[in-house]
Amino acid sequence: MNVQQIYRPLWVSGRYSPEKSVAIAYNLIRGESFFFKSHSAHVIGSILALKRNECIDIEKLALETGIHVSSIHEFAETLHEVGLISFSVLSEEEVRILQVKQGEYVKGQSRWSQQGEKETLVYETTSAEQAYSEALNDGKHVTSVMFELTYNCSAKCIHCFNDGAARESDETSKRNRKELTLNDYKRIIDELYSLGLYRVCLTGGDPFSKPEVWEILDYLYNKNIVFDIYTNGLSITHSVDRLRSLYPRLVGISIYSADEIVHDKITRVNGSLKRTLQTVKDIGRYGIPMAFKCVIFKTNVKSYQTVESLAKEHGAVLQYEVNLSNGVDGDTSVVNNLRLPPEVLEIVLLDKNISMYVGKELPNYGARDRYMEASPCLAASGTFNITPEGNLTPCCAFPASLGNLNEKTVEEILNTSQTLKQWQSLKVKDIDECGKHDKCAFCFLCIGNAYVEHGTPYKASSVNCFMAEVRYNLACKLKNGQDPLNGLSIHDKLEPIVINTPVSFKKEVGENYREKHWE
Image (cartoon, rainbow, N blue to C red; front, side):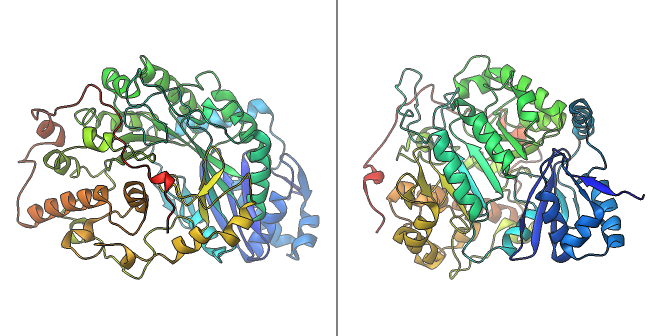
């Protein structure tokens, strides 16, 4: 095909690093990412420099990159095939039709397939993203950031770990606080972009509880920064078309059960499941990648598996979480009241959809080598979290402030924060009791849990240790030939078990670690 001009489509975003000669590009309609290096990266860089729907002559592109015209033509055919360029400008209606066709294709399809250096988007970082981040991993770049836009939320989930979350419906929420403004976010995004940012995750609370969220999304889109957004879906029932036009990389949606009574009991909002599923249906119509996020605890343990059916129905990635955490404000009531007892947790951990799954077909039943000289966590290594009030933290679960972005720039904090230097020097061996027990091989080490519990990362977390012990004991039973299910399905095993679920409970906050300084 003798094409003389190529166009950058509305749905293509990405980032090019001329210093490293690497690039990442996203086809956000298909939900795919691609990694490029050397000459191909130079071409992608020139395409990403175009405005959306802008064109460039093949001959001009050849001159800019120093690549022969015939090679550019051949490469262009490949890029067109995977949807990273177009040969003409598509109308808004034509784009919508493409999205609807993608929605029809996605429904019931798995998003876990992989082909070479291209990978369908999943909840975790894709291989293309990993390759790009590793190419920039020199300690000078920030590649991805989570924005906790607000702690305000249209739901009142009983297990929420956010600062200020209310445990009882009549309890006054402490979520309201002075938050970053739209201009603050634009400034911070610009600062992060200069440091290499290419992906953002927006969360909360619920991001759509912040009035400026749409302007922030517009700004990210116009900066070529792809974004994930985690929501309960309650506030965007009538705004999905607007979201569609911004091409999110992923929409994570909280769903706790297909049983309306159970889900609504957890969110404490009547009719919340119906509203959320309407949003899911509308998002799915356009093939926008979705992940269903479901935390498993006493309230929904007997019906959590129904979320898997919903995920299959809507072509969503399923993400279960079983390790309940204390609130970042020191509240221990969720763990104390809602965490599954060991005998029930063992049953759930036999579900292959659980990230902490224990099974006899796994290497060492799911145990992992613990390298004592390694860093316990990848947080604050090219990726950070920003709280609603502007604190830069390693992640949302590790709320140690490295500095406030109303007082210093991102770069100033990264260069001067003593807390950051201390964090980056931390090794597994520095954590009291870590690696000293057989159960430690079954630990999914979360330093945030340690910090929330003790005000320091140097003491082992009882939350982490509890889960490690349950997984270890389950593995021992399997090694000894025991069948904790007694030949039954997980559902049938759980059904007759009496689980005492508290109707309501109050916060249980001890000494406030936030008044401490990590020393």
